[in-house]
Image (tube, one colour):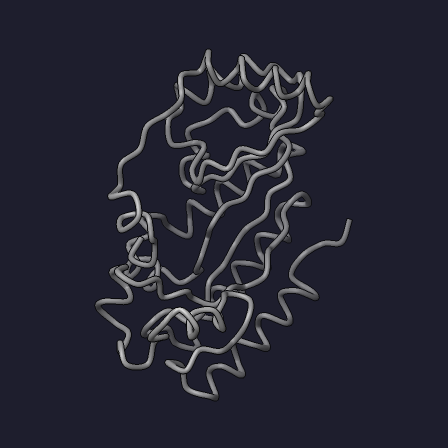
Amino acid sequence: CTFCCNPVVTERKWRTMGIDKAIEQLYQLASDYNLDSIIFWDENMTVNTEALNKLAKSINGKFKWYAQSRVNTLLKYDLEFLEKMGLWRLSCGIESGSPRILEKIRKEEKVEEYIAANRLLAKTKISVWYNYIVGFPEETIDDLKLTIKLSMQILDENPNANNSTFYILVPYPGTQITESFLESDRLPQNFQDWASFGRYNFNVPWHAPEMLKLYERIWFSSKKIFFRLP
């Protein structure tokens, strides 16, 4: 995606740990620390279906596990099988409900895929948290309305779905979206300036004041009404 830091940080290089080695370490951790659940911090755990299915089969429900995933890759899996093998929670980045914005940020996913995957998840008890981003360059009010509409549809169609806070776009230095669309003189210029900015606040001088007020209202609403309390 154009906003992603990975092409800069990792140069898009990726490798997987051997499944046998991973299982050995997982079982050792679960045994040593009496763990009943484990979080995988791989940013896209579902990228390799063969590897994940083998890993899941080896876990075999001995402990619960949490993973991050692209939404469209979930369509390649038997989600009921993963649930039986211990998958209990997913975190997925939807980002936008606007096809126009998804194309501009090179998300390479479609709104229809989001809806289809969510409906499949609804047939399981897997808890899923969806993340959204506001403040994309050229994003309009209509684009934001489509995102909010999708976020509410997601909740309506899946009792196990939750929407995370609507984060504001982070313009990481060197990313395509920053280099191409945002004026460099309006971005943080040093470490001190960057320290005062984060996706949880609105110290973002590259947005017009009226848009910042709107983003803040969306953020506040998303914290209060866009997710289900336990």
